[in-house]
Amino acid sequence: MRSLLVWALYDLANTFFAVAMLSFYFPLWVVEEHGAKELVFSIALSVSMVCVALLMPVCGAISDATGRRVRYLRWTTLGCIVPTILIGLTSHLPLALGLFIVANICYQLGTVFYDALLWRLTTPSRLGQASGLGAAFGYLGSMIGLLFLWPFVREGGHQAAFIPSACFFLLFALPSLIMLRDQPAESSMQSWRSLVRQAFLRLWTTLRQARAYSKLWRFFLASLFSLSAINTVLVFMAVYTKKVLGFDEVQVVRFFLWGQAFAVAGALVFGQVTQWLGSKRTLVVIWSGWIAALALVSLNERPDYLWAIAPVIGFCLGSTWSTSRVLLTELAPKDQLAEFLGLAGLLGRASSILGPLLWGLIVLDPSHYRQAVIALIGLLVIGLWILRKV
Image 1 (cartoon, rainbow, N blue to C red):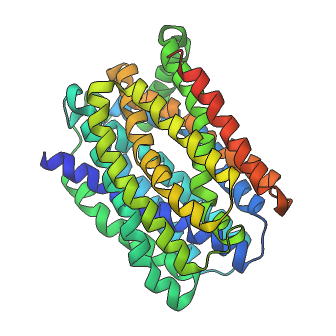
Image 2: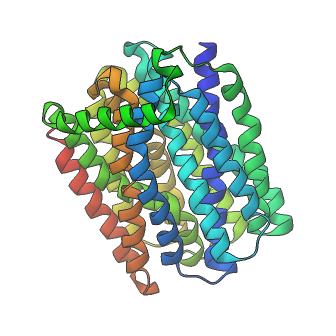
């Protein structure tokens, strides 16, 4: 149980980066303080995600070949933290966007090694609860991140949050990076050249065996569409609440805290629900909840109306990744788990390209925010329709 709690603490730690750089202060810094279009941030995010999509399968294969998860998690963590600190020291937007691309690549690759650790920290019958615990820690981290970073933003603006977010990431990640240990692997003494060759061979074998895992590939495709919508909500919710609803900085923070409180509850509740309803049925309920919430948002843009919808969004948000992680773990062969997590990243991270780019193109005309929300609903409907065949 101690190892599981230490593992879950990393989910809290890396949320400091997600809050500051993906969902909140960095997008606002780009759009508000530099006057750039949302499409500029979407393009930078998309470039990083293309790199991630290409690297994730190989990283997963190398991880499986060596049995090393924690070592690579340490490297990717530092690879995320250092560029984030440098972003906090520059006012040059193109340089900051370049550093953001590097930081986000490392942040996203780290999730492959982190997720692959789950299988050996708990039993198959308790995967839902364990995954839900990690997700709950993550959304608790979102709340802590907003509270810890707000004093810096209040005094120094959005950019003042970047260096503290990196420091808090490292501070809260240290127990996981120090206490978790890799299991010995026979291939651990191989050369890098041999490991890379072996990784590509394993990856090629996995791709050739794709027909044997048809349900898994349908799940990947369903996730591509549904997560495109969900990731877009996460990236542009802060910008939306300020530009469309007229929230000030304090109201935005309060709104996010309100929603994140329900995200923590959703992660814990659906961790239990998955045990008796099953991960697929649970995911159908969650994605249906997303469709209902966004449909309500598209019907009314009054600020008080969004406050009432926030608990639904938070509840669905908190349970999305914990349930998806369980379903993927159940469908994938266990000796290739990190490899399939990498393949899931190839399509899953592609969702962070499709959705934000679609949003950025639609809202080039500021009067089309409602149409952008409706487009996200369409993506979720497609994902739900594909999921029914899994």
